[in-house]
Image (cartoon, rainbow, N blue to C red; front, side, top):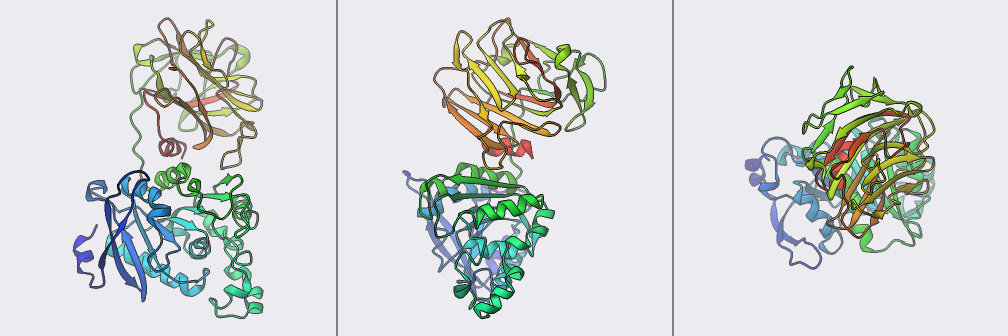
Length: 483
């Protein structure tokens, strides 16, 4: 951060906002207030200890900001605290009721230039649009895709005609209602998403399915349809039964926070306990680059992997990779992840397992309409439906019925400390399942196998980059792996 320049800005006024977690006494955070192009603006900076010693400062570009009242402690405080804890700054500027007008976009350009040049912020912002902030930020973003790292929205407005309506918005555009209607495609965000999609800017929205102020179908759902058609990566989380309200689930959405953190920063991922890259070009041994738990190849052949080489498994031959027991794998809290490419319709196509003699430990596999797993404590089953199904589409629309001939990143997070399993596909949380007891990955006398989950459950496909951690990874860490 260019501290000398910041302190030299004559218009900065230090203000204080209370930002903290519910149920805790929040510590005051300095909000630096100043003007940009004659409009009131602000930045909220992470503590010095949270900033990288080298490099730019990641930041959230927030809208709307009215009279310095938003973002507020009561609404966005939970999110802001988590962004700041990850070294992510927050900034915004009050452009009034611009409804995404050209004048508002000019001010947004001025704020972007100021925070990049004067504060050392990342030239690519992570957008966070609440309600009408969607028009403000998306009308700017579609003209500046090179300045956007990702975009998140809480029931964001994406269509001017839907909200506030042309009769109300036309004044901000300096037009009559008829003139704005005739030129709507020039200003509405959804018809202009091509450049944003071409830049592969990832998008995440959470939106209530009962919203009558900013209806889901005309806004986030329409945005998702158009963006996905253009090839843009879009995640849409529905809030069943919720409308345009202050429900805490909108403002304490862990998936939204994980999404922003994963894309705004270089998320720190701990070293795995075991890591089979499967990059060998031949032979019957695959190395564990993390812990020395090498595996013996039975049948699986070298193939093009997700990253470098992988291994092709043929169910009819019983192909698998065998790894001997190690005390390192006597884990009760753990994460297992792998890249998988199915080449035939799956029928209990095993990814990894440790139960080949009727044992009650762990396995993960793909079936016709679900991704399936089992967890036990070594003596009995704890949960035999660690699954997500075709209807568990998460935020990206893909459920457990996996089409063949494409790569998927599958991760199981088994957390005995919290009594929770989390199942991810391509970084998208598909299912969270509570359990009681202490799960066990592997016990003495067992064998671990890649490409075989139990008995005759063998993979028909390619597996690559298999990793095991001795801890429960966070959603942001899993998403970073999937990126």
